[in-house]
Amino acid sequence: MVGVREVGLKVFGEVLDTAQRFLVTREKPEHRHAIPSGNVVNVFVVIEAMSPLVIRHNEPEELVTMFVGSAPAPAILNTKLQGVARRTLLYNILTPLYNSYEEVRKAVEEATGKTSWQCYVRPHVREGTRPEQGEEAVEAYCGSCPACLLFGYTMTERGAGPRYNVKSHVEGDVYVATVPVAKASMKITRNAVHDVTKTTEQALFTVNAVKPGTLFVGKVAVKDVTLAELLLLLAAYSRVTRIGAVQTHFGEIKIRIPAVVFANRELGFGYDLARQIHAGGGLTDLEAVIDAVQGYARNITRPGEVLYIGDVSASVTALTEEELAAVAAQAWRDAAVLKASLELFVSSGGKKKQ
Ligand SMILES: [Zn+2]
Image 1 (cartoon, rainbow, N blue to C red):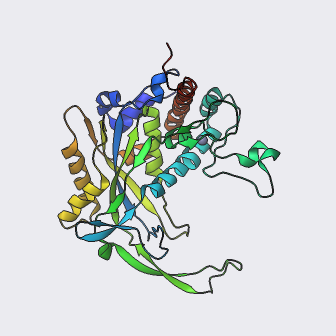
Image 2: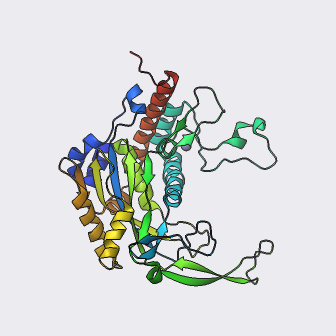
Image 3: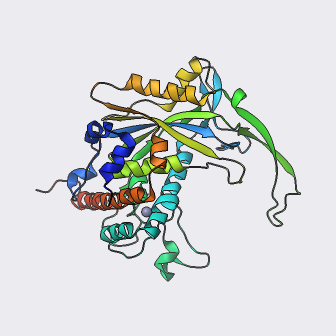
């Protein structure tokens, strides 16, 4: 069976050895695992629009933009990207590995004491049923899997034990386009699909969309994670293929991770990075944007911090299913220790017992 360290070496090479001290290890439930350690993996990303993107917030026809220097640029809000990364982790990684690998099922059983597992991104209440008619009808976040422990969840009144909220270990900022909105947007006219007939012969409507090929830059701060959890998150972000609009020809994206900085602080902001790019007149070429992101990461890394430059998304995408299964099994064990540590912390009222 492949080890998680070997997988980590495949992704980060020998940099992993010096980076390891900015990752956590959780062997058994302990009070200290419930408290932030200050370790941050700063993951720099470049998001490429592969088809028109309809990124909306409140105004249905308008793109989300923010001023960078003197002109507005399209922006992707973190809530959107984080939501889709969580779904990708859950449905495209954790669930298929659970179904295919005995090793993962064993880890889940050890972690949860249960022989089945399901976790939904949204509360799943079947129509016409009431919660008391069965657990399955209200199953939502499972509260035990790596996706829940990494992205956070709220304990409901369901079940015994202490109640608490688990904060996300993943904190993204804003992902800003490398050119102003005037260069990055297009109008598209779509057929409105009729709700009842599902035909498209009804009215046409026009929306503003981000042009394919537009590039966005930003950073995801990943806090207090084990190596297995980091690898799982990197795999999830790298496998995200779609954001926003539900229609098939829209919203396709590709995420690249050209730089990672391991530190005991959060460093760099997507907005800051975008502002530097815009100050130089903006960039449209992928290689040039990757260079700019890597240069930015290099400039803000201080002595003692660990910079990794390389194509992280390509490395994690190239991992075999067996390697990912080993990572997922370890992440399940790590999640179980974290959950038990949180429960220990909550039941002690936050005070350390000797
Ligand atoms: Zn879950």
